[in-house]
Image 1 (cartoon, rainbow, N blue to C red):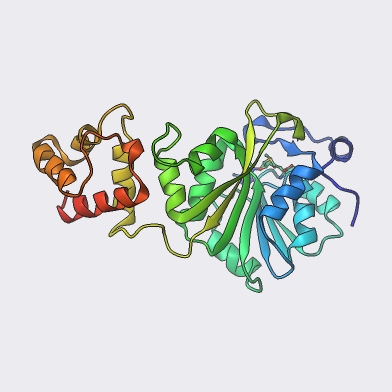
Image 2: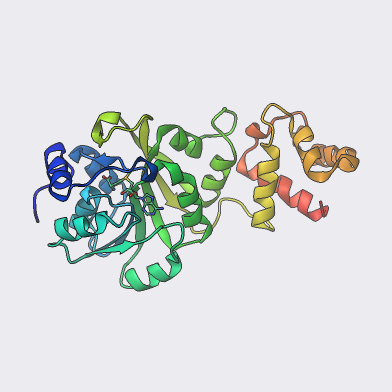
Length: 290
Ligand code: SAM
């Protein structure tokens, strides 16, 4: 029902009708391109039995497209001024629920239980506010929400870091964290011109397919991520040097001997280690009690 919201004309109309002004501090860049919206929705593999959680619906351009495809759409929006606008433009969409709140503060487990109990799978689909992309994604992943896919528009550079393979300069702790929980896939890059107002950075759509079990087996997740962080602490330094700061100077010899024993050259840089190697490394450091 109703004309597409995600067009330049309709978006300008809605904004004028409600006297809305954009807040840069909330990362408000609204999508005005039907093709990009269709690509995002298609990547999420939704159907009438599935649910979609949208973060930051804005004036509802993506929400409307999701409602045409999914059985249930719940959209969390922080900006109180958008709530009556969404109620107006989505009035003919009973499958949509708008929740006013900060996604970083919401109890998402409870939200899932109340909103998606009847769904056969739920995915997150969003054009994310760029200032909080990483905290939002890490919250979704760390809470182990029962998600199928996460399809999000984010800053292109962040998308490339998430999907990066070992060896390049984009590969870092974000790549490892995302790939521990998901299989990433870049869907498309997107020009500035599909947004009002236009952001200063390039954008991309990334699809994260959430794994049933993490990519590697580690004895303690928090410890694993601390080892990963430590390995990337100073990117120009060798693994041996970065890990010395982690285990303590007095254990340097023992630690490098351990690296050699497990077949990881202490002279390598953290950015060359695969997830399997990080897992093996963290298992050995953990067992040594460091
Ligand atoms: N989905 C709309 C679109 O594509 O046109 C709007 C996308 S805009 C990039 C990001 C949206 O997220 C804005 O509506 C903003 O108010 C909202 N937002 C920002 N921070 C948020 C937070 N912490 N929790 C929920 N929504 C947030």
